[in-house]
Image (tube, rainbow, N blue to C red; front, side, top):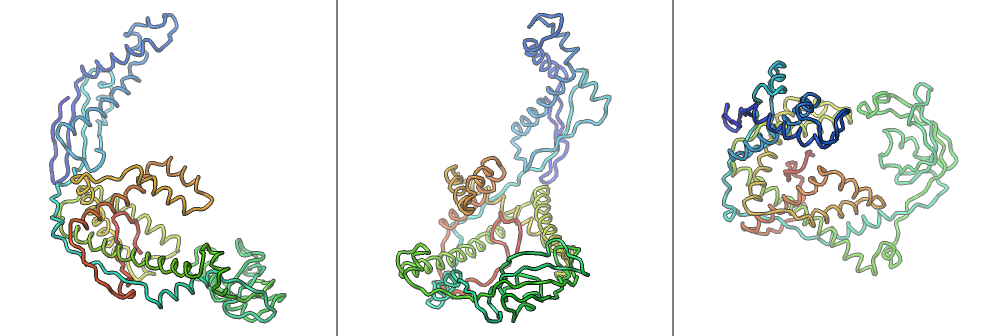
Length: 456
């Protein structure tokens, strides 16, 4: 095998690899000898078929396999011998000259191909012991604690049927049939459908038209589908809904008592209040961690400047852009509707793609140089946590991930990233600064993870 570097520019490399015809013929001969004991050919006893005869019958098909294996092995060896670190699988290009290919297949010419790739950049890691972080933290106030209790109680709201006219916050049970120009349309009918007035569950005008009705009433309600409605045939259309009110029920918030908290899984009212406080504090701690992590990733990006493998950037951009445009299409919106342009959005997401690739490479380098890994046990625990989020479907979730290596890799990646974050925080200096809940939870539109695939 002969390897010649034919291009070297920045991170881009191109190699020409030549495998001698005699070497290929030797591999073919070996495969045919092995095949001799496995085939049955009329007129020959088992294992007695001459190799020359096998070459005539199977030569080209076996040679195709030999060439494929030769390319795989030689390309791998070429990278190892040169100590190259490709950023992705090299692109292999064989000649397109049919006559030349036939010569190679017939064992009359050397096999030559080129392999093109980008290498991983050399990354000089920063001194993380010099990093200083301000970790903003907030404690649950009595006011927030009380709001949390009220929200939990609100989630336990029950409804009691009443004979009065409906009003805001009431829940109706209705049958309805929607028509456009007198014709019923798909998805425009329902029976015994619950509807909370004021919740904005239906198109504008529908709920408003059912304020003041009583059980047993029948009413035609006119409402117009929004121009950006997800179904093109309905967008912007005016519809008339023939509605029958089966029930009007008013909300009744339950009283906080021992019976209620036990139904929610708490032994006492005090335990319930403690649980609410702990949940709120956990949420605040999560926000605190996210903001600290954002600061850390910003520092990593600013401290590590190097050329990026453009194919990795392109792949990342394509993944992001595909998701963005898919969501825009589902919402039936354009960039102009959002006060932007496609050109501006492409530039924005191009920068995000570059950030993710840069941070991904830095994170990987830190992990590699410090022997940081994610154990199979940690991945398994993450999988169990994921499955627990789908009550009743745990087995299906487990099976899906276990049968999909890519899905399992997506579980491992954030675990690895968090391990890197912890490593850097332990090396640096972290100072807690207590702030108000409002200051801590102020929305931050920038991403906080190299793994997220969309931005809010």
